[in-house]
Figure 1 (cartoon, rainbow, N blue to C red):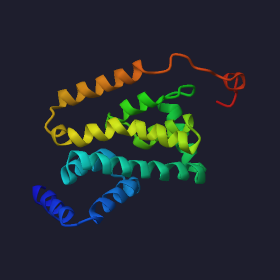
Figure 2 (cartoon, helix red, strand yellow):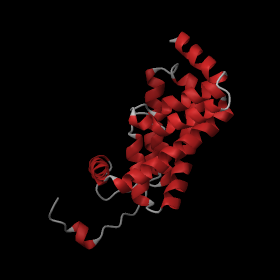
Figure 3 (cartoon, rainbow, N blue to C red):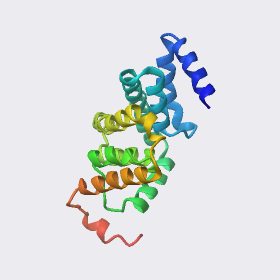
Figure 4 (spheres, helix red, strand yellow):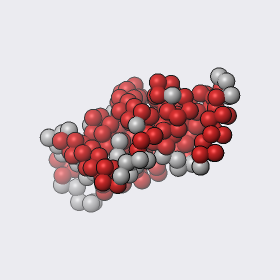
Amino acid sequence: MDDAWSMLLIIMESGGWYAPVLFILFHVFRQFVFIPPAVVCIAGGLMFGVVLGIVYSLLGLSGASILFYFLMRQIPEMMNKLSRLKKRLVGRFRNLNVPQVALLRLVPVIHYQLLSFCLYERKSSFKDFMFASFLANIPFVIFYTIFGEYIGEFGSLTGLFLMIIFLLLAYLLREKITFIKWHEFFDRTT
């Protein structure tokens, strides 16, 4: 495994100016090959250093958010599937706000695209969605780029403790008021 990382680092270091471009494009299209974004952020920190890894990962995740936004508009089946998943996991009348999404993205077992869909439902205009997505990505990118190489050294108890803290903070940051429209409350189809 160390030989593979060494080879990848040598290729990226000798890649010149197109290595960051390839990394950003890989961030954008990694969702189609089912690679978690945390793994790519960790790799960015190892390959480019902390500062450039954060910048390139933020650019890549912003590109992935743009692609996600336009795919939601073009593929209604994907939107329906994520909507059903959100209703089942989050609740029918619950919406996650930006700080909650930012904290929940730090938990590696929570579906990244589901959280993007929660932002999409809340912020339907492109500008608002991109701003909310950028803000929600900042803690995620910083955490996994800086502390990425140490996460593998955490014990299972430490990892469980961090996940419980993140989930507790996400619960405490929730909206305290839920507005339910009259016709949705008395909907007989569900």
